[in-house]
Amino acid sequence: MSEMIIRYVHQVGRYLPEKERREVELELRSQIEDQIEDAYGASPSQAEVASVLRQLGDPVQMAASYGRQQYLVGPTLYPVMMMVLRVGMPIVPGFIVLMNIVGSLIAGETGNWIGLLIESIFIAAQAAFFFAASVVLFFAIFERSGGEVEAKKQAAAFNPLELPPVDDPAAVNRAESSFGIAIGAFLTLALIYFLTVGGLTLRFNLSDPGTVTPVSSVWLIVMTIVSITLVLLNLWALLRNRWTFPTWLAQSLVELVGAVALYYIFYTPLFTWLSEILPNLRDPLLFDRQPAIFTAITIAIMLISNGSKLIRMWKRRGEDEREKVQAMSR
Image (cartoon, helix red, strand yellow):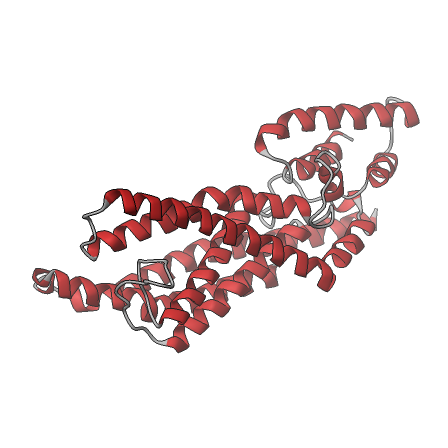
């Protein structure tokens, strides 16, 4: 009995803000144990525990019931949307302001610090607004295109007996996936901006983009597609509350394509720019090969990290199949 309750409470807690999680988990576990004892006594069977949990409903909807009333999107998608906003709001405006200041310093625009400060505040507010608007719009479109309906279907088919273990390798790291969606949304906006101005720049200002380094528009488009695909894969995993072997494999392959795209739109232009402003860097051995070396290191890290998880998921899938066979033979 205890194991199934622990799994259920753990899944609910993953959708809640960290500051509320512990209190809600304790309250929910006590509520579940009281309901089970009132209905079936002190020694309920596994089927009876599952019956109570099934009545409580899918962990996503249970988590949504602890929040305030929502108006923007449905209760199934709302906790995921808020998690993305909580992660991204401190990061995106700060990063854009930093890049804007660095771009101004490189361009030699250091005479009017007050003007630069005012401009940075304005850009931060603008970035926060556009990031929040893009995330909300994305979730609203996803809901109305069938995402909410699909999520409700999954909730209706909720089976407590299939709750994953707490240490399941296929479990979604909610903070990591939310960070990925937030960065992916920001990266998509940045790539569209780069396509608009014709290349890379540290100034996020359409009226004055500063010095623009031309890069291949084809690879910018490829990287934009990669960014959008990764956002969709992470959102799908968050809604399903777990990765599957095919979806994690797809993410790994898309990330590899993204690493190749980075070679053309970031690493090569970066080292070309460094060699122009710091000619002495040309002397060290293999400097011209640094973009390829960085790309190879990025790919190696991805293969090790994603590959190890793929192996653990494959092994776990085999163990789950054996457990099902044993359960059926009993």
